[in-house]
Image (cartoon, rainbow, N blue to C red; front, side, top):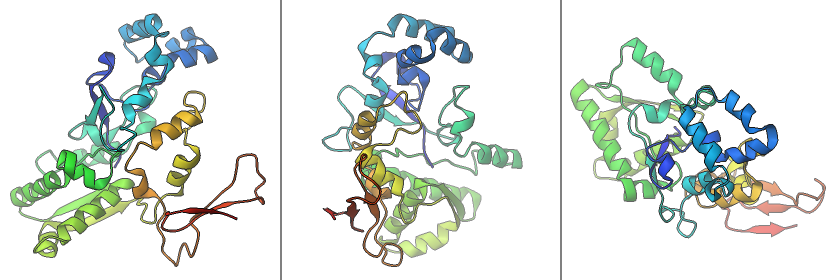
Length: 293
């Protein structure tokens, strides 16, 4: 599932903090203009007073005006893989990485990933001895997960450890893009010597939840015209395009070309000021080129 990222290097005030959607990190100055700082402060009763005081005194600094949050969530635009200069963002380990993306009072309930599922499994009697989380950096391409973080090697070790200590194969549960990551992992294992035997011996069941097996059209839209994630008043469309185009994982979710589902075209796009019936840009299933009609 989507995994929580935190700042290892970068903005001094954010170090060791989550870098998910946050009023604190998106730029409170923009809220001031809309509804007034005093109103924002009254809404964020769960935010420590010292952090609010910091924002009040520092709100005119450039890192808020330029939206430093976007710089931290983005990758190096030249590689779509490495970290921007002076910034290092990585995945939190353990259950906290996949439960809720935000711990802020206003955002927590709406940012749940596997929080409810984890709470029920723990209540049912599961513990860290027989239950494990496998968070990953959802921004980078799957093969880079292994190259940078040895993610699939560590996932294999985790599964083998559970298989050994529990004496039975494991059950995998993946959500959204986590299913594509799981698919990549299983195909990787299958390509190795005795890979299918390893899968049969270690995997009992695989639950796939909300899997984008055919891709997600929204991802194509996001890199063409931007995706503001409902934060139109905070993140501009140009900013969202700039950020999303740095993420190497986006192509992993672009709709794929299966003839039965996408005979010749996987998307239609038109200029914003053009009528729906006007000229369109057709994107072919392999997404290798576009053509104007």
